[in-house]
Length: 556
Ligand code: ADP
Image (cartoon, rainbow, N blue to C red; front, side, top):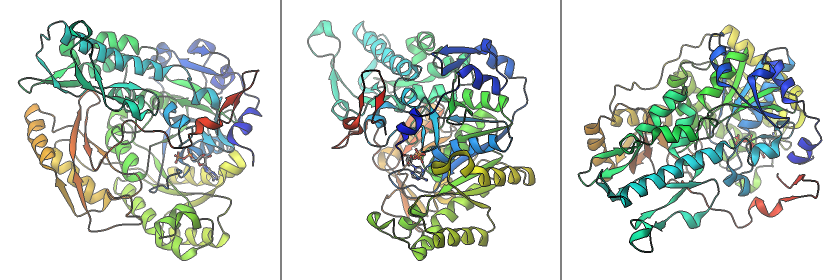
C-alpha cells in the first residue's frame, strides 16, 4: 500500500474553479489561492443565505485508540460515495494544526483513498488562517502588556491574567515563560505561557461566529483576566475588538478544496476538542449546507466528547441539527475495549470484540437520546477477520441499529457506497427529533451532572474546592447560564483513560472551570488538560523533506 502522500501526489487535481462549478459557484464567488485552493467571498455567503439547506450528516466515533479511528477518513469517503451515487454532497472539516503534523498524530486530511487535496498544502500553511489567528491572539497579548506598561488604567492584576500567547507548534519549552524582564522600559515582569494556536479562544470564536459582526461582539467579550478588585476584564474594556476583527477578516472566510474524487470540501477552523468544542466553523458548515443536498461533517474525539459538544454547543449556534449521525467503530478498538492488549489487536478475537461492543452500544444509546437516527460504520482494516465483522454486524442488528462496512481507505468512493446508501435511506425513512441534553437555563453544576450521568454513564460529580468557589463566582458574574464545554480524556467514557469498555458507577472530578466568555461557554476541566503539547522522541518531522523541485517528502 502506498503512503498517503504517494497516493495524493499521483492524483491530477481539478482546478478549484471546476470543483466550485460542481456546487454551482462561479469564478466570481472565489478568491483564489493558487490553482487548487480558494476562499469564498462574503457577498457569495450572503447571496447563498437565501438557499434551502441540505441534509446534515455528523460523523463521530466510539472512544478511540491513540491512533484515531478514522473519522476524517470515513467523513471524506462517505462524501465521495454519496456523490458517486448521485447525491450532491459537500464535505465540511477542520483545518490541521502544524503541531500535531510535525509531531505524532499526523495530518487531518484523511488517509488512503479518502483524502483531501492538496494534502501537503492543507497540512502546512494552507491559506494562512492559522497565522491570522496566531497573530490576533498575540496582538491581544501585546496590547494587554502595553496597557499595563502605560499605567494600567483598568487596574489589571498581573497575577490574575488568564490570556496566554500562542504558537502553532508543539513546543513544551514555552508552556511557562516570564515576560517583561530587563528593566522598567521592557514592560511589567509577569508570568505568561504559550498554548498551541488551536487552543486559543480566538479559534473557538472564529468557528462559532455567524458573521463579522458576531465575531467582533464575541472577541469583545473575551475575559483576559481580573482587576485587583477581582472583577473580570474583557477585550472590550481594552477597546481592541475592532483591531482583532480586522486581523481576522480574511481568515473567517471558508476555504474550498477537493477530495481525490473531486468532491467539494470546506476546510475551515480547527478548535481543540478538549478545551474547546472541536468542530469546523459555523460559516463553513452553513455555506456547505446552502450548496449541497447532503453535507458530511465531523466532530473531534469520540461521541461522548466531541459529539456531545457538537450537539450541545455547535448545533444551537448553527441552528440546524444533524439529520443522521454516523458512529465510526473499528474492530481493533472494540477489541481494546474488550481487554485485548495493544500489541495483539491484529489477532482475531471475536469474544473480546463482542465484550468491547458495550462501548459502541453506549454511544448509540446516547445519540438516540438526542432524538437522532444512528448508523454504525465499521471502518475496515486489513487485519479484520470475516468472523469479527459478521459478529459485529449481528450485535448491531440485535439492538436494531443499521450498520455497514466501509473500506474507503482502501477502495475510495466505491468502498463507501453501501454506507452512503444506508445513510440516505435512514434520512429518508426516519425523522430526526432533536433535543439538547440540557437546557441553558440550568445552572453549571446541573448541566455538568447531566452530561456525566446521561452521556458518560457515571454516578457522581465531585467539584474541587477551587471549582466550587468558581461556581459561586461565575454565578455572580452571570456566566452560569452558558453551555458547558467538557475537557476529558477521549479514551474512556470516564475521566480515567484506563477504564475502557462501558464503565459504570464511576465518579468524575471537576478540577477547575475556565471561562471562555467570547466563545460563549464554560470549560470544565477533569484531570490535567494539555493546551501546549510536546513532541515525541521521534517526531514525524524526522521523516520530512522536500526535493529540488519543491515536492514534499515523508508527510505521512
Ligand atoms: P480520526 O479522524 O478519527 O482522528 P483519521 O481519519 O485522521 O482518524 O485516521 C487516522 C489514521 O488512520 C490516518 O493515518 C489514516 O490514514 C489511518 N486510517 C484510517 N482508516 C484506516 C483504515 N481503514 N485502514 C488503515 N488505516 C486507516
